[in-house]
Image 1 (cartoon, rainbow, N blue to C red):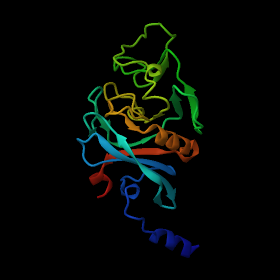
Image 2 (image 1 turned 45 degrees about the horizontal axis):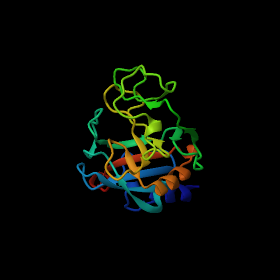
Image 3 (image 1 turned 90 degrees about the vertical axis):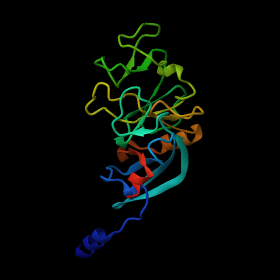
Image 4 (image 1 turned 180 degrees about the horizontal axis):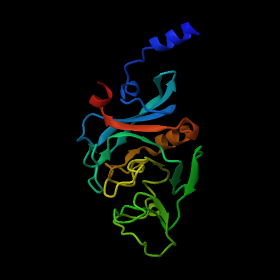
Length: 219
């Protein structure tokens, strides 16, 4: 017993991106989105699994795109940046295409499905269904989720600004499919890579996604 405790305490984790995050993420699955700087729109996404106290990479990295205005810790609604920090993955995944085999609850998007981006609405930064063709009670400035077929064949919700929701801080941050350019604040990867990532994620592993710069991840 004492020997096992000593060995555990003496474990030195490899100097990699997963092990460089502070504070150390909870859960046993982790996704990192590493950008060279806060002004780039390109990043690298990597999956990690917990092994004891340490994080070990899973599979090959994927090229990713982030916000058109880079990364920002103090993100605001509509500023075109991707939030810096570590966030849980939402308990429901969504998509315009049929369930690709994810382990999370999956909702197929239909006409009238919205993510509320109106800071004045009590439903700000939540998923809402409005009967198809009916005008939403909240203001809208972007297409409905069901209309974004190229970007949203499938998506995972990044739980940014959700616990609690702060009006105006930012809404609708997703991990979704690439469309050929930067995003409005989400993280996007190639569709085939997205499917692999979403199938890999498990609710019981309490997965997190950590977004930041190389300098922050490699102190």
